[in-house]
Structure formats: C-alpha cells, structure tokens
Length: 406
Image 1 (cartoon, rainbow, N blue to C red):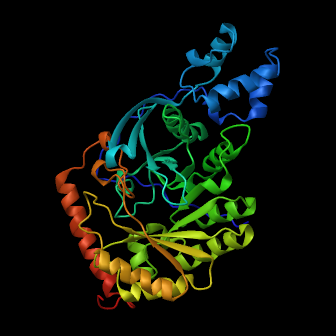
Image 2 (image 1 turned 135 degrees about the vertical axis):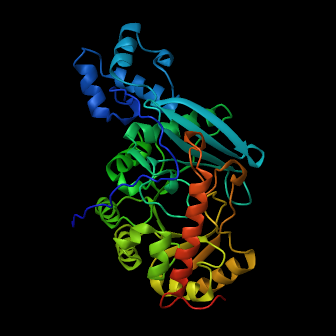
Image 3 (image 1 turned 120 degrees about the vertical axis):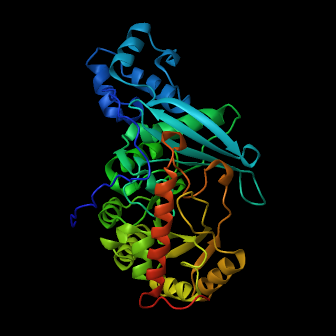
C-alpha cells in the first residue's frame, strides 16, 4: 500500500488556543483491548471473570468513575483507578435544541482541550424504527481548514486517543439508558478529520462493533473523510462494513481546492477512485457529502460535473444546505436550487438526498462544531478572513470551467 505524507497540521490565526495542560498518563479503560486487560488482571492474580465484570461496567453501564465499579472488591477497584481512567472526559456541558431531540455536549479533556459531540434522536416514523445517532469527534480542532467549517478555523490542537473517541459514545449511551433507549448509529463527523487519526479511529470503531464490548453493528458506523486517500486505502484493506462518507463539495478542481484544501494533495478524481475501490471491496455504497453554498458550488454546471465525476460508481449524494458560520460570508443555497441540483444527479442515475439540518441554533449542525468556549474570534481577523474568501471564491468561479450562474 502506498505511503504518502499528510499535510502539515495548521494552526489558525483566527483564535488563540487554550493553554495546554499536563496529560494524565493513565490510559482510558475503554481503549484497552480485552486481551491486555485480561493480562493485567492475571498479573495481579485476579480470576478471569473479573475482566467480564469490568467489561459489563464499562460497556453496559457506561460507568464514569471507579466508584461505580460496584461488583469489584475495594482493593481491585483502587488498583484500577491507579492504572486506568474509567472515563477520559473530565467534565461535560450540554445544550439542547429541536425540543430536546438534538443535544450537543462540550467535553473537557484532562489537558484542557475541548471537543464536542452531538446526539440526534429520530422518532419512529412509518416502517422506520426510532434511532439515536451520535456524532463524535476524532481530533481536538482540525488540520484541514475547509472555509465553510467552524472547526477548521479553530486550527489543530491534537489527535484524540482511542478511549477519548469511544468515551463520547459511552457518555451518550448512559444518558439514553436513563430513558430506556440506546445508541443505534455512530458517525465520525464531529471535530477533526478522522482519517488523519486513522489508527485511533479504527481502534475506536473496532471497540464499538466488538460484540464483547459495545456491540454495535458495523453497518451502523459511518467514517467520514475530506479525502485522505492513504486512509481510505487502509480502510479498504480491512474490508469492514462501515459506511464511508466522502466530503466532496465541488467537482471542479479550482473550486474544490478552495472548499477542501486537501484537494491540493489528493484531487477529487483520486479520492473518488479510492472510494470506488472501497465500494468494490466491501459492497458498501459510498456516501458523498456536498454542502450547498449559494452562488458558489450550486450551479447546473456544478451538478453536471458532479454527476460526471460519480457516474458508474456505487454512490449516494447528500446535499446539505450550508449552516451559518461566523467567519464565512457565504449563505446556504435556496431550496429550489438544491432541488434542481438533486434532479440533475438523479437523472444521471445517482441517488441524491436533500438533508434537513438539525441543531443550528446551538451550533450543533454540520460544519458548526467549534468548541465555542475555547476562545472567541477576533472581529478584525474575521473581517479580513471574510474579504479573503470573497476574493478567492470569485477567482475560483472565473477559473476554466467556472461558467455562469444557473
């Protein structure tokens, strides 16, 4: 498998980063493989069934502290607390929208970093069962810097450890259990680029789908990427049944270079080819995410070029109205233009869905996760950023193949 360097991780001038604290050296218990935990217990002369007891606490009860390990003797409980963290989330604050159906959690990590996760509940409707989808983060901040995404403008702080990823799901699982509900779907679409932290993300997905741990079906896991081709190839080699979601947002090179900076290293044609290989290896349809931005990427020509790029592939396109982001001058495409775009794709034989955004008012919708309490953007810097985006988008639209607005 080909190995390529990843883009240099960037720090945005828009905000100041939180002060880095001392990391807790203890690994998170949810990130410890079962065989390693069994070995740790065996070295202390503990019977094999202790591993099952601990697993029940961690995965079924989603305990958050060692004090809740009630079936363990005090001595072992104390040893576990010395060696592991039962939860890697130091503190969490929750805001709600959509009459409580959407909730956003701001998680504080041990070193002062902030990340966000989102719970979206979907009531039963017709033949569809009730669902509870958790959107989780894989990095604190993001190194990619898509200009319509609030997370990208935070800059990059660090990768999350496996347990820090998994514990976001465990947090929501515990809250849902209080209402007699459970997590039905997990999407790696929160803060960060999952495939720039591929090892931890794949370890987290394995823990979530392990029947002896969280036990979620692999087809209920979605891993997104803005186009990290080596990460897609790594995923393909494993042949999992996860859904792969690719952030496309434009088919024209000049425009995608602006909207998805990774396009400079891995152009859309290479990304689609890698995703197509994943679809062939797994039999799983690839989802392509396309944020609809008024006057930028929503012309009939854009729709036609997107259809041509994806022609013949096992693909489903999600059209997502852009959500408000403070530093961006752009607006969402009007509904009639989104529907016209979808019609072009459908006539070309592609599946296309227009998504309804949730949690906009609490900054929980696609592209809005910004760990808002980390820092506040400087107004003058934001204004300069907006002017720069206006100029760059105008240049992209004038590029060959730009065309007139439809």
